[in-house]
Amino acid sequence: MLGGGSWATALVKMLLVNQDTVGWYMRNSDAIGFMKIQKHNPNYLTSVTFDTNKLALTDDINIAVKEADVLIFAIPSAFLQSELQNLTLSLKNKIIFSAIKGIVPESGLIVGEHFHDRYDIPFDQIGVITGPCHAEEVALERLSYLTIACADRKNAELVAQNLSSDYIKTKITKDIIGTEYAAMLKNIYAIAAGISHGLGYGDNFQSVLMSNAIREMKRYTKRIHKIDRNINDSAYLGDLLVTGYSTFSRNRMFGNMIGKGYTVKSAQMEMRMIAEGYYATKSAYELKSNFKKKVKTPIIDAVYEVLYQDKNAKKVFADLTDKLD
Figure (cartoon, rainbow, N blue to C red):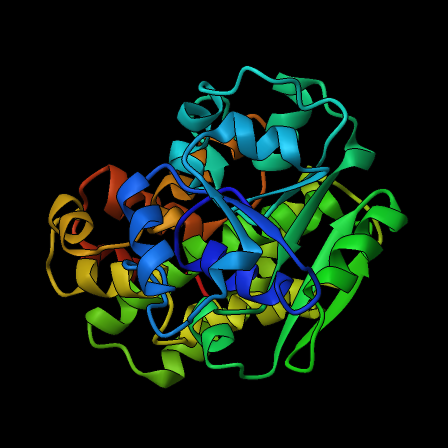
């Protein structure tokens, strides 16, 4: 496991149900020292206690990579490349799974494509772990579902088996591109849901917003990678709904603050966790400008205008209401 946040912590909890030892890289050496004594992450999911004898904790990314055959990255996309720059070992013989739901800013690519393009990793060695699943509910051992995507079914099954438990159910798919883009897009739609809530729109409007969001997601992912996928599956619609509606959603929280009048900078400063949708909005907006055929994305456009063009959220969303059906 590479990453020290809430999702990384939740994934380690899942893995320890099936593994005797899990290697865990955190860049924060103070957090590692705390965990060795207090048995829990000092900053995230503090209610989750660990048997630290089963953890190989390290603040050296090269040690973590050297000792593992399967690497699960749960580092926020905005910081992934800066962490990888500290890596001196090759990744070519590793199986890499991304639990990151965003775009790598330096390349403008989703994480799987970034590893393939920049590190020459074959797609059958790259996978995606997606929801619908909130780390906070994993901490409480509430029944949750994961979708494991990989072109190589054996690698998908390996990761799925190691994450499964009485309270975690897993499903396998080959749609690595679609699931990863959907995981990125749903964060943008969650920001939209948060903005609308902060502006005072009610449940009736939010239901229309989410209905339009899943159709927008379908159009976008179809343009990116046209295969036979059911957009109503849990990895797409389910993940969108839980991120758009849940009080645990950091992207919805971020949007809610914007809707209430916070500036982008002040909202980011007040939040302790990264809202991946902020970075995803810029990438998704710019990427669609390169499509050969235009795709209708009024929700992405509205969020982009608020976050990056400093337009008035109340006016932008009033205009958006006339574009939804």
